[in-house]
Image (tube, rainbow, N blue to C red; front, side, top):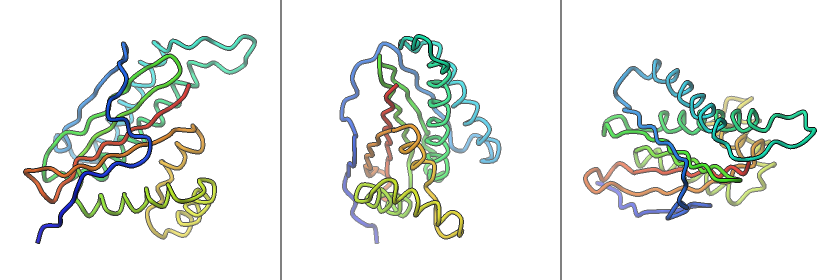
Length: 196
């Protein structure tokens, strides 16, 4: 029996992303190569996005600062893009053979990441439970609990998401939308907002 699932939105999800003169979209086919080989490609893609957007980053350097702002932006973009892509790959339903995509939008003081994939309803339900605990918990407390779970090897760590929030102050939004032609599969869109 097929479960009924309706579109659900959480967090800082934007229905319409503001217009940006600088944006870039990459698409990946989930079945184009063995998963082991794809992991390397996603890391390379994340590094490419970091290099690309750091080169066009409009923000000014801080006078007399030892921190190179472009290098900081590059590292943040590479880390966040890699984490988002790895999660999209890990939880994609390969049976539907629909692409994974990542789009980055560049603004004067912000970068918006948008990653989409297609996941089974069971994977989505587990993800939504974690999102609910994230929304209803103190982030530092949840980070500590997840570190303990990781150390004990009990359950999924979700440390990448928590690290993006704690170390980079990224804000997140999520939308889960059922596919009409595949009732057991859901379109998943994750949006990360990074102030730079």
